[in-house]
Length: 435
Image 1 (cartoon, rainbow, N blue to C red):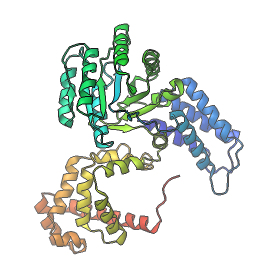
Image 2 (cartoon, helix red, strand yellow; image 1 turned 120 degrees about the vertical axis):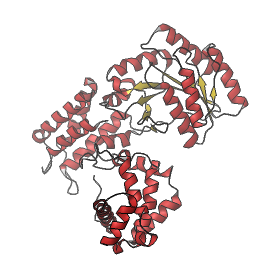
Image 3 (spheres, helix red, strand yellow; image 1 turned 60 degrees about the horizontal axis):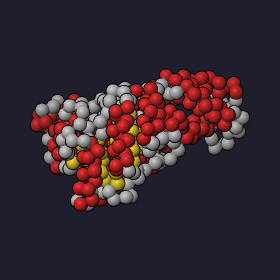
Image 4 (tube, rainbow, N blue to C red; image 1 turned 30 degrees about the vertical axis):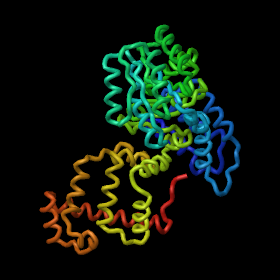
């Protein structure tokens, strides 16, 4: 997502590097690149026009302070405008009431049923809420069964009354939620291949019966600009309170994310960035803008780590790294913790300048991870604590014990030494983060 757009924006910024100030002459090519980047990402034409005009107006004639380079100032201007376009501030869910009612609506195929399970998982794990999912899609074959299976995998209950009227089902679900002290009621509704009157009438009846705190429209990010028409159609009938963009982990151009808030004034509240049930993230405009500009998303990494690795473990490992006593025993423990975070390439892509370093398309074979672990486990505890003793005969024994070859053992040891050098640079303050 956004990779091609980000590459074009990076090219635009290169055009003004080394200049003493930003002028009409040196900014024209940059603005042309930005315009093309946004249009090719399927951002609405009117949005592109307004965005580029704002950036140009703010950039032209501005004196560059001695502490700032023209390209740094320009990046800041572009980032600020992207944040503005994406909605400025994070908009949280309204879940103060008990039980809070969240109605999910959308077209068929948008990922609505999976999204409701992801949202239930997020509410339970991150916000310590007791969610109840309600099955009201009685038309799509196996929709109720799908929600039941998702509920079982998450240990989240599903209120299911089969194919009875959805309006009657939600009425009974609300009574049940109050009796059983649930915090949030999540209602999965039917979708269609297009907006039609029977669909809207049913949704209006559900809204009237439940008076939901949130009406979230689930949108497939791969729809492109047609998503705006869908949003406006649902909003005219239901007064949508927020959008959930799904499939942002695919080959979508991502332009719809830059158009929604500006054209509809409806905030994006969540994005689906993985098919897994923990693949739903709260939408922070500033963090999304930084990802577009290849500044990374360190906060996303921190949140992922926080949910899996305890503060005590992280602190202990950090102290070992800072002390310079980090050995292969520590590396093995860190390695096991990193495996818990899921595919390593997903973490690497969140690092600052990942695209610039060619890390955005990296694919890490899980077998390679297993080979590394096997090599380290084939060492004795003493060897892991003192890797400097690993000479030819020991390496041959380790290679044989792990089923690998000596070249792979040497490669691992070299990578470990490089990592120690990088940690030393971080400790001494010689490594600078990008602007």
